[in-house]
Image 1 (cartoon, rainbow over the protein chains, first blue to last red):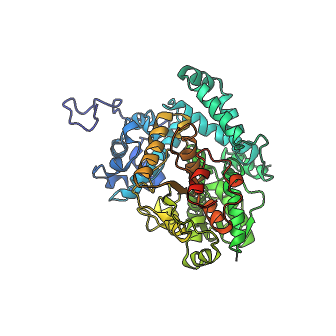
Image 2 (cartoon, rainbow over the protein chains, first blue to last red; image 1 turned 90 degrees about the horizontal axis):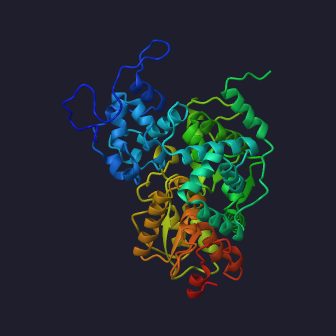
Image 3 (cartoon, each protein chain N blue to C red; image 1 turned 180 degrees about the horizontal axis):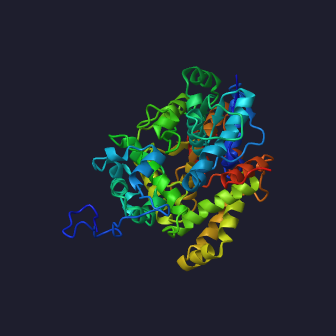
Length: 214
Length: 278
């Protein structure tokens, strides 16, 4: 249902989750629009819904909330609808939307920020495989300092839910064939190249978690 | 002339053929490449997707290494280039703090734009041994190298020209098309193969419609996507070349092409043989 269509049942919109007022644990309100604008530097308030972003997007047909609607959702504070959308995971960050916006709204940066937010929220990602893949990539990075395609896919498939999902969807045989083809072409390398500077990378991760070096 | 060089994980893995062609081409052009010692991954799409702070911090370490060398940095991978420039912008704006000594003032080039400067185009033309006459190609830039312009610095982001100029300098017949910067799907095939196949398949169709016999790329992921999808196709395939592979071909002739292109799924040898380029 189009959340932008005029509704008689106002003020509560019919499509996305009810637009109830939220309070943070601190008791303060949740100024979602200002927060997203502040974090991304995107002038979301300048959007006049011309839909240029959605028309430029190569994957808008696969999104439940189209790029121009994402901006409207942010303006309206519909956080849960955004974080549980397919949009944040399907977006390729190809930057077509931002590039063609007449008001220079960085739509892709907003969607990236929402993807970050969705990942760190309690809402289950709508595209589980993609979310786990990105997570696995970062795990590999922290392990080797660099990323090796063979070990990345090995670690990805070692997640039992992922393997089950692939078996259920019937994509596993095709993937094994691809792996075999890549191996035959000499494109996979079983010995991962490590960076000697891995300690520095791990230190940044620790610091980001708030750990103080002794 | 000397540059610092950040190959990135792809050139250390699936795109080692790209790395080998780069080494050869820069030797021909007499430009020194100094690989950053102990470079680390730029974070790529994963850090950008899940962890914006690490997306800014991870490339900064490599920028710091290049600044220590004091040599302009060149990146052959579109995504690495984009991430390095993104991090550099935030460093300049003092929006990220990292434990390394880095100012963000160093120039970061993508390899195509560096080589497509007029002086180097002239040098390339002087080095030609076997011009690629009669080879009809389209150039495909993808997303990360050209967009967003405030990061990449491209002014002709709607119709970029660097690869076109390079391919033309090699003597190839460069066809114009409207899909230079339309996304190939990147790594979305991991979870949504339907989307991947649609986007990549469309690019191949449009390249054919433009009359191209081959596609010239500079991004390892674009190359993999466009090449791998053709691995079981019967009939006419469209070889997907790294631009440096074509440069090497034009500089050295095709005697060893069988070795250079053996990692390609869409076999370029029949096409090159037909054009008398082997």
